[in-house]
Image 1 (cartoon, rainbow, N blue to C red):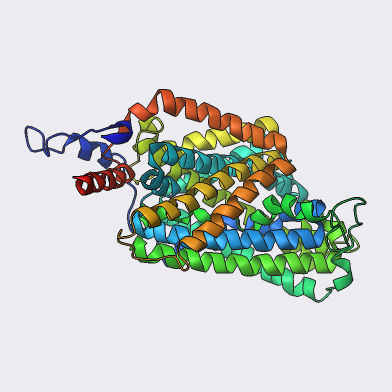
Image 2 (image 1 turned 45 degrees about the vertical axis):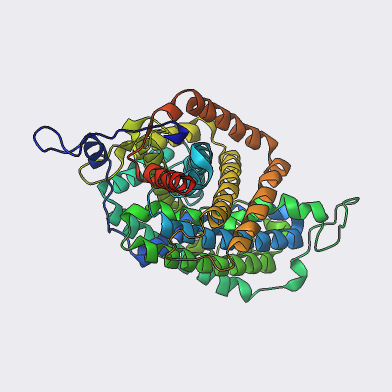
Length: 489
């Protein structure tokens, strides 16, 4: 078989009519099917992202000013919208836990599948670690339980929320939906309060940088500032692409996934617009460009807490919990799929009696906790996560283009509006965002590249010779290879 896939095929049954090796292997690696419908999936899509509305995006004001970040957010919103439509089509074709890895595996081969899956894994392991640090900061600032932002808080985050995931996927997604709904309601409350004190003249109050090409009051850092603000424009949407990772636990995934992804993206676009406009208009771009809690500060022009600002502050913690919780889910499913197919050690894909990939939850959780406790640098880890995300976006968009060109007759229960033009826009913008990460944090970009090199060495010298042909994503790719062989003969 092409691509050095190790087949585990055997006679359909054993000597006494038992399960074949393939069946036995997959039985110990099975998720709970039918646990999620469109509502829970939509909540999952929003949960991935909602913490980005409460903090992080505002640092883009220090890179591009109001105008630069506004343009960057629009372009990144366009990129995510196009990507979501492309992924909705791919998810309807191959509804498995592999998500982006599975799509790229069929379109770009084993190397493309591994590159994509590894990039996604970097995003979903680093982002929860970073968010646990931010949760610790919120807990300390709110004076909750007398705790300080340190390793006991990070440990509690991972232990409690991984425990809920181990309980079961249905329970986990319902918990995520409730916490996400609280966070979204708080953003609406914030917007109503902030817009009552909206001032247009505060939007562009960042001083113009002398000598910057194309600089003016709306673009104080010039044209290049737009590009530098790309990674921060992504914070309004980062993670929504993870919805297809729930495919094997979804009711009627070919129909539910496209609906949920479109609904989640629509909600996130609205939240981004009202959050960005209301926060900068209420307090001014200069005042919130580098604070950790821009929504709270936007409601406290004189530094005095109000009832609404306290509500938003507590809801910010809820938003962080929602994103942390859902990103743990996404990381465990991507690790599960890569391990089940043999790209990573196979034991990581074993599931419990409650059909939870327990090692896929515990191992990334332990790694995330160790990184958080050892570094305490949430911003740096998020920049590394963004770098991995942009690589995966480019490869997933490319996968859509390749499959449309190479396999136009492939059954597609859902078709991307605009076809290859849509995914081409996503591809170009993803490549631009990837380059922009070097403008913001070169060290983070090189750290991500280092991780990539180590992972690729493992794949090149070891795991690519031990892939599991029975894994759903590998079978899907093998079917394409067999059909191509028949056409040639």
